[in-house]
Structures are given as C-alpha cells and as structure tokens.
Amino acid sequence: MHHEMAFIGMFYPSFLACAIVAAVLWYLIDMLMLRFGLWAYFFHPALGRLALYVVTLGVVAWIAPDF
Image 1: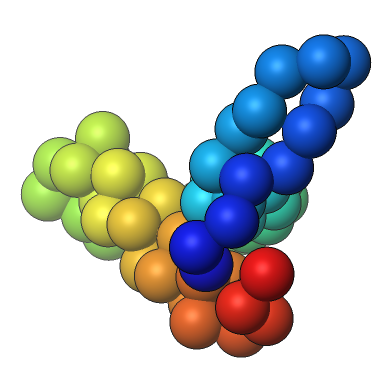
Image 2: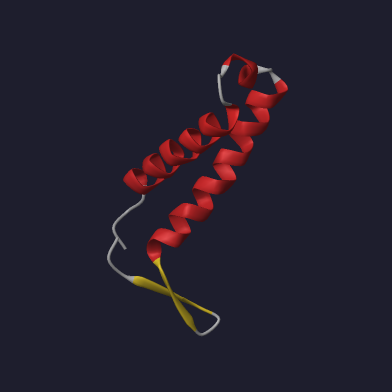
C-alpha cells in the first residue's frame, strides 16, 4: 500500500482504510467474545483486546490489495 486516498479534499494513507476495516471487525469479534464469556479466560483482557486488534489489522492489511 503505497498510495494515498483523497477524501473531502484531504489525502489519507491507504493504511487508514485498513485500520478502519480492522476496527469494525475487531468490534464485532470483541462483542462475540464478550457475549460467550471468552474474555474471562484471559489474564489481562485489555492486552488480549489489543492483541486481537493487532492481529486483525495484520490480516486485513495482508488481504488488502496494493492500491
């Protein structure tokens, strides 16, 4: 991802689109894990959530085409 995207007259890095998509996916996965009580198995749920976002962002950036 080497190019920028123009939105409302401003340029944004294409990685921002990946970060936004990853945030939406992370929220959905987080709500599912919360509903099924899976966060209770983590020693530190906040670090687990951060790790989940980092992994989700990595997967989205890997799948995204090169703009």
